[in-house]
Length: 103
View 1 (cartoon, rainbow, N blue to C red):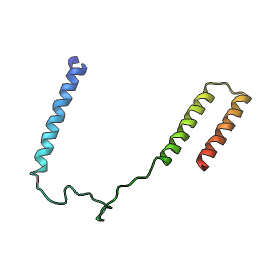
View 2: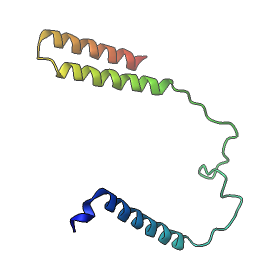
View 3: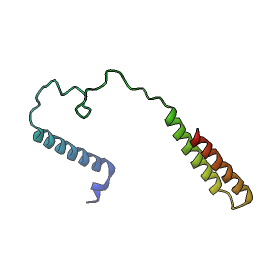
View 4: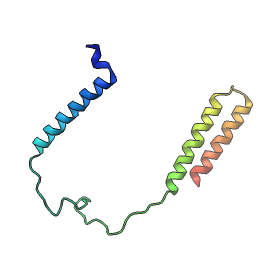
């Protein structure tokens, strides 16, 4: 039974299992019927807007910079000892994060 734990054998077994589940799902789904509503978008019964949404990346970059500063700052503080220099570093880190949050 240990041969089942070898990655190539396990992969083939999982592949076969997925294929059986896929085919069983296709049988349960029934025949496909064409309709005009299938390719259209659904938005809670409302008509979808005709223009594409373009929110921009500003909010993403602010959040990404926040977590980058936070994680790298804590990594630096965690790798040093508990000294006054570390306390000053943490205070500066807190001020930088507050400035980043407030914009």
